[in-house]
Image (tube, rainbow, N blue to C red; front, side):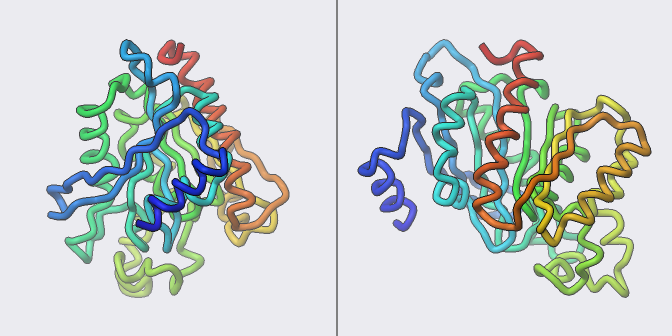
Length: 274
């Protein structure tokens, strides 16, 4: 209901552009529940002959599927300009988008990387190719996007992160992480095996197109700089940006414009975006 009235207010104020928004439920076989999801369709989707590339856009800790549509006022206009489908799944309060090794009810890697894309490809006119799929997100979702893309690089062709918690080991008592990985002191392997900066060891150059950024006043700036350095050391091509800003929606509303433009160019070079 909150989402409905917020969208209505946006419509009445003239902020909503030609892009349209579907709010759907997708049943998760792995978690035995419905997962809420938003699908944003650009005006180009009205052409019934068009099949469009897809960007999966993940929310952060304590957020939900509606965050991007409610808190990033320029998003719909940006999606319209870039002519791509954007999917915002619900990643739960503190899932970090992995399949928890200690809580069998939390399988958000399976859900977001497999179940939701399968539904989207079956019910929307998508280009069904990794060259037409990208994933990004903010904070916890920035970690999730890179994590899922690296672990499913046969499915995603490009990945991004905005203010991502790409190494959460310096924060062992924060954001419910130990609830789903176990205490760091006694379950260090769970932490080491599920953190983005370590998963980089599974990458070869050109496995993925990668873009990530972070504000210089963000508490995740050091871990993002460390990820950038590791990618340089491994000679993995990527785009890394630092700009003024902190861990907030003012920064992310600006950042997502650059990331969607980056994905648009990736899709264009792969001849999947007209």
